[in-house]
Image (cartoon, rainbow, N blue to C red; front, side, top):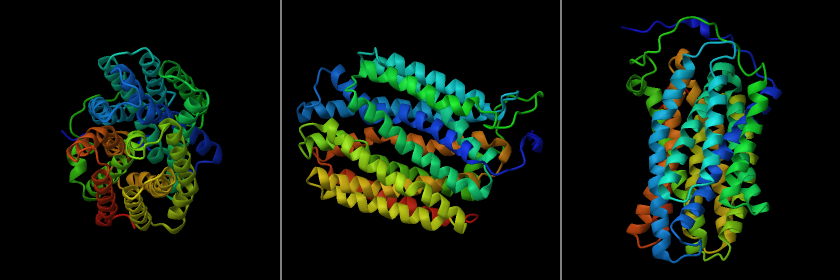
Length: 424
C-alpha cells in the first residue's frame, strides 16, 4: 500500500539569518569534535595502551594496533549504516511542539556525550568497541537530524553557503578537540569527559533557539517502516540520487584512506619523535585550508548556480595531495600535502551537502533520505582504517600504495558527479 504524502509538513522556505547559520555551525562543531577527535587520535592511543604498547612501539606492534583500530572502526561502521537512516526516518515521523529534528538532536547529543564519558574508563578492546559503537549511534541521531534541516529550513539558493558552514564546522571541531588535548596535555581518561562537556555546550544554543525549526502539528502518524519513497532500494533507483551516492562514497573513501593513518605515517615513515605534536601541526594546516575555502566555495556555488565544476575541481585537488604524500619525506612536505587535501575536501564538503539536498526526490522524507545519503559520508571513514591496514600490510608497511589508492578513488568520485542530470 502506498504511503500518503502530507504536504502540510513542508514549511514555506524563508532565508535563514546569520544567527541561525552561526548556531547551526556551532552545533556541528560540537558533533564533529566529539566524533573526529577520538577517531583521529584518542582511539589509536587508547588501543595502543590497552594492548600494552607505547606509541613508539616497533612495526610488528603498530600493525597489530592498526588492525584492532580497523576492526573497531568497522564495527562502528555497521552502527552508522543502520543508525543514520533509522534515526532520520524516526525524526521524519516525530510530531510535537519542539519540531521534528530538535528532539533527536538532543537525544543524539546526550547519548554521544554519555558514551564518550564511559570510554574514559575502558581498558579492554571489547569495552572500547562497545562504547564507541554506542557513541556512533548517538552521533547518527544528531547528525541525521542536523543534516535534514538543510532540506527542511534552507532555501535552494542558500544551501551551498549553509553546507559551507557545516564543512567549516568539521574543521573547527577537529582543531578544538585535538587542540584541547595537546594544549592541556589530556590523557584519554580526562579527554573524553572534556569532549562530552564541550559537545553539550555547543549544542545548547541551537537546540534552545525557537528559530531552530517550526513546530510540527500533533496528529496520528504511522510508524511503519515499510518501503516508501524514502526506502533505500527506491532511492537508489532514482538516477541522480544513485550517482550522487556513488560519488560521495568514492570521494569520502579516498579522502579517508589518505588521512586515517596519519599518526602512524608520521611515526613510522617520517620517523617523527613526537608524532602527537606533529599531528597537531598537520591538523592546523588542514583547518586553515578548509576554513579558507569551505564557505567561499559554497557561496560561489550559490552565486553562480553551479555545483559540478566545484566538486570536480575539489576532487582533483585531493588527488594532487595524494601524489604529494607519496613523495613526502619531511614534516613540512606532509604539511603541504595536508593543506592541499584540506582545500579540496573543504570545497567538496561545502557543496556536496547542497547537492545532496538538491537531488532528494521527496521533501517529506528528507531525514530518512539524507540519513541514507550520509552513510556515504560517515561509513567510508569508519571502515577506512581496516582497508588501510590491509593495504599497508600487503605492501610490507609501505604507505605509497595507500596514497595511490586514495588519489585514484577521489578522482573517480569527483568525475562521477558529471552523471547527475538535475544539477548543473
